[in-house]
Length: 158
Image (cartoon, rainbow, N blue to C red; front, side, top):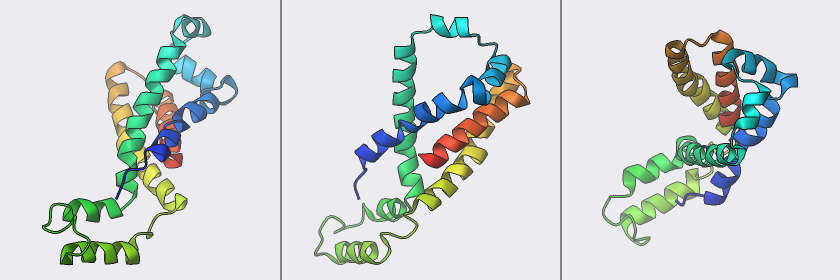
């Protein structure tokens, strides 16, 4: 199994695209600015090339991590890859893995299934992290909901 870097690079664009929509003043932008204390003036002082570049890099890392979480066949690969003969397609292990992938390699490889995993990760992993940080930073529920919702949608689409 190979990691698909092209798909990861494309998926890493999702947070930028969704962010332009999500944090638009006509959507959640004004509420987010009020919850964070951000102002348009502060935004103009930021180095946006740096912000967007690092956002893309961090999103690439997230997308890289999500791919093996969503594609269940990576689990089989990781369990068997150190078995003797795994890299030899003519060995019993190589034949077993090849047959397994032929029979089950496409199972649960749909966008719908990926969205399911993304929602679970967003709600049960990312949002709790945002909540913990927010509690110590004195941020309120609105801040948690806006950012947790944003990341849940992003990861679901990624």
